[in-house]
Amino acid sequence: MSQLTRKAFLRQGLLTAGAATFGGVVPSLANAADDPLDGERLHRDVRDLCAFGPRRTGTDAEHGASAWVAERLRAAGIPVSLVPYPFRRWRLDGWAVELAAGSAGREVAPFPQSVATHPIWGTRPAAGEADLVYVGLGTKQELDRHDLRGKAVLVDGKVLLNVFATYSADGYVYWNAAQRGAVAMFATSDAPGNLVRMIGMGRNELDANPIPAFTVGRQDFAKLRSAARAGGARIRYRLDAAFLDGVTHDVVATLPGAKTDRDGLVACAHVDSMFTGALDDATGIAGLIGLAHHFARLPARRRPKPMTFLAVNGHDTGFPHLGVRHWADANPAQVARLGGFCTLDHLAGIAAEDLPDGRLWRHSGDEERLLLISDNALLYGMVAQVATRHRLFPAIPAPEPLAEANPDLEGLMVRRGVPAVNMTMAYPWYHTPEDTPDKIPPAQLGRCVRAYADLLDAMQRMPVGLIRRAERTPRPVSRD
Ligand SMILES: [Zn+2]
Image 1 (cartoon, rainbow, N blue to C red):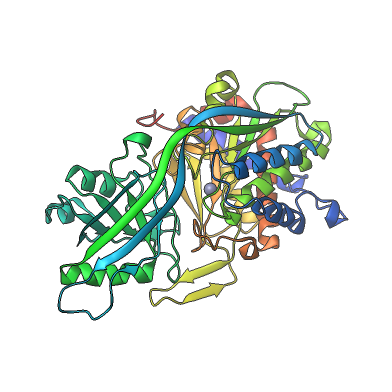
Image 2: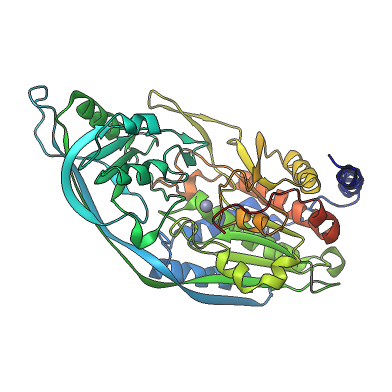
């Protein structure tokens, strides 16, 4: 740790220790129904947003949901703009996948057999039938072992922390299989039961994506794996989808600073979702609305800096091209002076271990949280304090941009020199049709949003020059 950082760290320790004693903790109001950070009230917004159905970017449901978010923010009494912009939209029209033939002489099941699948977002529409080849985890050595020309590859994997599929991060298996002549890819959903999980891939080249790809329910995946290993299995697939020009929105609500109109703070969540999207990210949008109402009510002396409450689209259904990118590109001067950026994404959910034998073991703690965060000692000090205060643990810090988890959200801001954090988590139903409001505990949601309120409160008191100088993040290397 450099001399400057050590000094800054000590200073921050004193600041935050003082804050804990003298009112850094958000007061709870006597009447919970009036408190914008109350868990039950936040949960109502989760349910209302989920009532729009899947909020896929550029659809009527997303447009309606974005307008609803704008109204909810406006109700805080602050100026709000709903900013439209064009993007390349992937419209999913339908799909079907069947095991067309098992291994000859071994099975008595009638064919074809339908398979629980979901297309991987943005992959190429096509129809065909092909031999099925099991490539394990799809490492280079495993791919090298097979002639993939004209074949459909079957890829095993794990979804780490319920979010990061081993085969999806940079699309390694997809792009390498296609390069070797494969015509389609099928990957395990690794979700409870036979649930399908819809995912996006870090390398999404839109119209240039070469082949169709699907995730498969875990139980059906096991059947396909046995058939492929036995030899002679064939799979039939059809993906109807199209790329077209679409329109989506940023929702921008700005609470003026009491002392300055520069050096602002941003809290951000995404409106769009794959399915119902309760955890992902109705919890974040509810938190964003709660924070806007909370800070708008605070006395001016508690919010010297301007605050932007930003709802974006295309994080799940458009990854990695949208998210905060449109807003950041349109506001470079504001970004250059930001004192902090918080992503609110997957805030609370019931905790369950998805056991290998197919059972779910529910427990009363939180899921592990991942702190996607700038390599910034001052910011980490503030985050560690609020995470501890509000029992957001266990919490694992993963520095951006090394983690490369959200190159379109806090990752993008870190690469532009902004101290940024995302205190995220996920449960086993992440990105499945079972990510629904009944799995969001209101008390846990309230606890997490209060942690963000305390963090933003601490950021309000932190000199911008000081925290920006503490950024240790390396220069951007890709994707921006
Ligand atoms: Zn999300």
